[in-house]
Amino acid sequence: MTPIDRGRWTANLDDHDGVVLFLIGMRINKPWRIDQWVFVAAAMGGMLAYLAKHPESGMIKARNWFGRTTMQVAYWRSTDDLLRFAADEDAPHRPAWRRFYQRVARSSAVGIWHETYVVRPGNAEAVYVNMPAFGLAEATEKVRVSRHNSRAEQRLGAPAAEG
Image 1 (tube, rainbow, N blue to C red):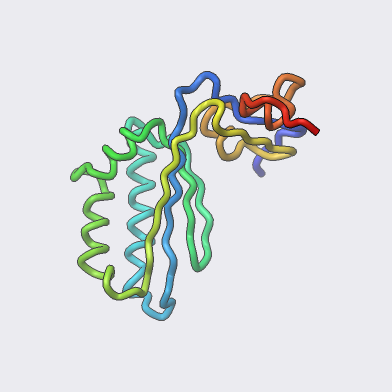
Image 2: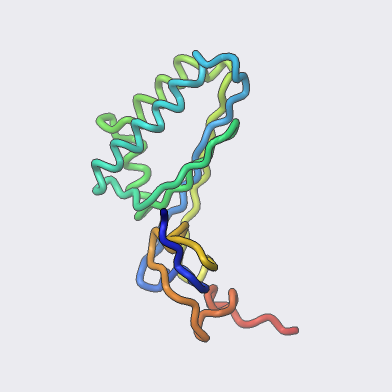
């Protein structure tokens, strides 16, 4: 069982230049066309296995959620690392991208998507209560909430809202 960190925790980004939050997934539009989407799901598994064996590629951590629309939340060291991996002919992404476009891009049986965000200190905040290591805190540094970082405004480095 995953250990739970009791109490309130947050992510410390102050000792980092930032991280890249990369959301990626697929949506099965025609479930009966397994021949059109199963290889897309398998390709993601291959990419994750490759990245686990090659930490120098720059992916820090990833978690997956499954359903008709799947989503992976991944944290990368930098956009340079992410883009380098995406373009590397020797890594699994580029060949999988080509196969997708050759085999199913026009069929609409499956859709793919991604979003990329650069997360810098002072521009993001997070709080976790009675949670195992997770999200931004798992990818950077998990620290206990204290009087210095107990409010979202403090974690964002913004002035407190007037009330």
